[in-house]
Length: 143
Image 1: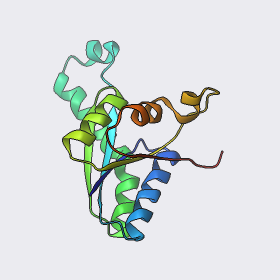
Image 2: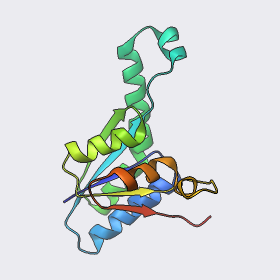
Image 3: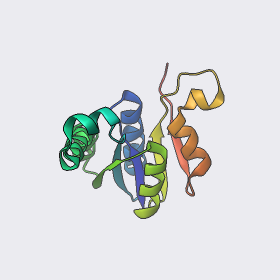
């Protein structure tokens, strides 16, 4: 079984990593796919840099940096894991990753702060709950 765990470097995403690791410690035979999605380059970045490869390299490095804590947690726990850094709109990119990589479930943190149902979850969590074809676990942290 492969579990997709989106990681953006926030405390909420690291709580999701802890939750997924606990599932494995409790006996679930799974590997984790730690994924970070970088937003597409802005018009300013495209005009300023003029080099698509450089922009891609910067985005990849930023994504890998944001995954470092999650990688350290998985390594310390002895849990097999893979990394994916993607570009695009986060919810759509994560759904594509989950399907392309054959993930059986998604475990993610909720960052929402708004008053509406979707706002309390966060837009990415809300979209994944509605559109994913596999189970989605949303890990809430105390406010």
